[in-house]
Image (cartoon, rainbow, N blue to C red; front, side, top):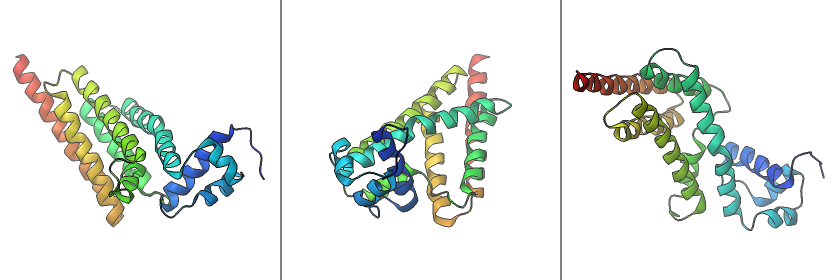
Length: 198
């Protein structure tokens, strides 16, 4: 078996993440995850009671890095908040053009578990999407947008919609188009705020 400086649990989640994202959760066995992690299946089950728990851990491990990436793209973009929101979509389009891009891990997992709404991975996915939405709402509130939660929800719909469309047809330009729509929504919300403040 291979050795690594990483804690065993982290090695398992890393291996599961690569396999689940690359091949799908139903296609990957616990044996395959154990093999990729360089462990026995018994060791894997010592750290995770079930494959379901491992799937939830895979998504949980994506939560903060994904949110931090969105925040970095937002923070590094020049211009007003409409341009910063557009930049998130532009960066997603670049990522989607990579041959190994497989879409949103949360949405793909939800599709595979569509008949299991109480699955722990579904709950993890919902929590992640809510965190992204809350972050967007706080960014809009800081700009004085009157209904920041509504605007954040509209942006989330554009984000998840373009993930689905691009996964289906492999045309990343849809993400750029969604970014234009998002920027237009943000500009409109800011304009309404300006009128109300005059």
